[in-house]
Image 1 (cartoon, rainbow, N blue to C red):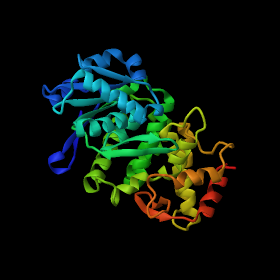
Image 2 (cartoon, rainbow, N blue to C red):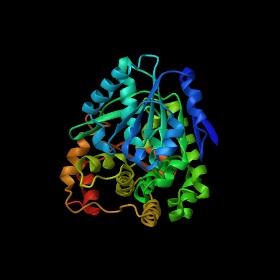
Image 3 (tube, rainbow, N blue to C red):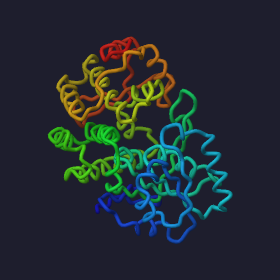
Length: 356
């Protein structure tokens, strides 16, 4: 087990990474306080005995898998259940699942009784390397992803790689895309190691994976400590996300995995950087090869129009001053945030990637 910390003064919290972490870690954090768990339904079906070991007799509020659970109506139902259980201001919520459950339970914790603590028990690779750290919590509005949310930091994050053993290869790929994103903006040496490993990373027992997850958490923890509320440095972690959020809002069905959309968003951002004279072409060639070896998408669906994607980008919550901004790369580890590009130039890149 490796332990690092998100340094936020009195709100400092640990991040534990390893395989077969001891469930006693959760009991130590709860310290006898009343608690309830928000649990992903698919996880409950696939990993019942492991959940029992971690959660014991805690009341469980099970929610359907998928982005559809991130709605205010779901928050209202869950809050009603907590009131029925008698959970008070001294209570703690536990988020057991992937990024959807982490976002939903975190939003619920931030708003229930004007705020109660919560613990992140991320069970997908994407949540372990990215979504569970940093305190971003949110739910969706119609046509606007994560439009309502809070910055509400957890008490602790416990990333046990044993949860990944029942994860689908598609979800592993999605998590690897977020892992690559972090290394692309923060750690060129690690990016090179990931590129060399390629498809071997799709094995949750890959020797390199635990060290890579730890490194990604360490980078994100440092960024969050320096810029908790995304006013400056933290914005570089949005590399690939401008297009990704539009793709997720647009469909198609079945829905994009977040990491799949981010992978395509990174490739498009690299091409945009090339056209703007910022990014060397070798960067896109590298990621195109890596993502191809992992089975991540490299083209847009033909039924998506560039105009539709531009309109969705224009509604993204990360707009500043009425403008859509991109994170572009000068080199690996040298991101530039807040780059505004003319819509016509963005549309041209989208068409290169197959948009109508």
